[in-house]
Length: 383
Length: 169
Image (tube, rainbow over all chains, first blue to last red; front, side, top):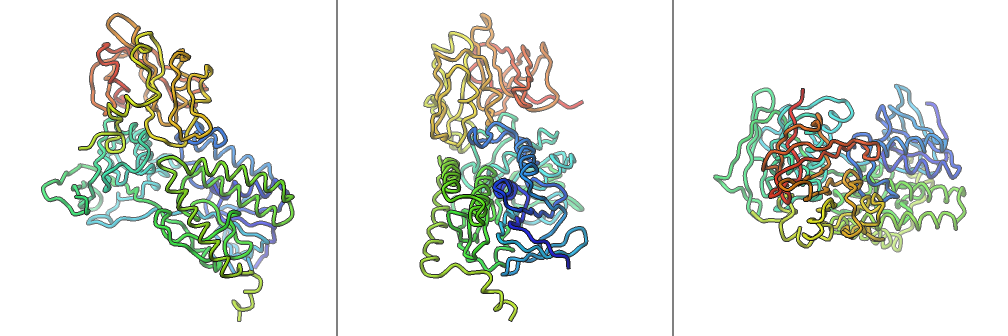
């Protein structure tokens, strides 16, 4: 097995991973980013809409342009990006098992940043296994990356920002969206995203759920039904739609497999998508030298992921001696300020309190336990 | 069904009346002006930076609602394409004796051409009347968003906010 030795190894070349790579490499660290996809950028290159946020977050710039700019910065920083490469294991001595283009590698790093992102939740209902039922993120990849329309007539399930934005983009790509179904009594995402959908004539059915999807070989139609405040279906309120595609935008959950494998301690925060790793202000987990950033730490959005990546990259560079403490502190202070801005307002306050809980739980954990020194654990692991 | 943007995706009359981005009736009567229908505190401020006249203010806390200083607004429309939420229109109620012009962001292809007759739609997508396309602008600063102007009968000026998408090829 070939061995690759680096200062910082980053898993995932999405918003968080690329930001971390830029920070660590521009400080002088030797950085390797590993991603299983053929192209870097994670979800950024699927985002054809203009981002929110502030000037510092390039608000008003379309997601794919932010992706291009970030990628350019990473290339200039000297970080290496290994694509088509799967990290299948992470050992306590911080060596990773990687398969790259059919070859096995062992990647040994002083610091590891896991920025593996999140995956879409699934929802079961009669007919949910029929071809034509797919994640909204999958539909977004089809239209915006592969330029293929998943269907002509679409029912969207879920009115969070993903459901709203992907519905809009499906219409931009030429499909009809017959409606958006939302179980809760309120629309989940931003009113302005919902407004675009409504101006296009698409109804949003709050307080409704999918009753069933029908079709012989593939989706031919869908039936929805109203639910009461205890989520019981209300008979007689069924509506049927002639659709060929049903998209599910019912939340995401962090892809934490490697974090578990590293032996990190976890928190359970439902609003962040379930089990999320404990981490400190530096994004370092309970295992020394293993950092996390982006949706793997709790599902938020791209701008927050980039800032968490910046934080992990700066912290790792500082820990390796590439940044003076004062300089690192100055940068971290700026990043914290921007993160607080993103985690405010009626949609962000919940994320801020969830993140505060996660940081508090980390403090309690560290008060009671020492952070695991990865190297010490090695013997036990191989015993 | 309950009213309001959180339930329907359409700001209610009360929400619009309380919205600091919506100009007064007096200002509207004077001609071109930005109408910022942004009623939820979301972290976003490109409109403030887009305005060259200091007519839009959000401040340090970017979740603040944009405040329109209506006396400073020239109706230039740079903010229209710069709002990621597509929540801004420019309205000119002085266009003619009988018609007003609504300029709105439009991100669907095909684009209409000046002089075309199109279906003018409300915030809920309902076709209210016919509109005549007065302008179609797509400059670099708009970053891919087109801004389309349509003239509609004056009585619809407070309700028309977009046009029905056109059929493809």
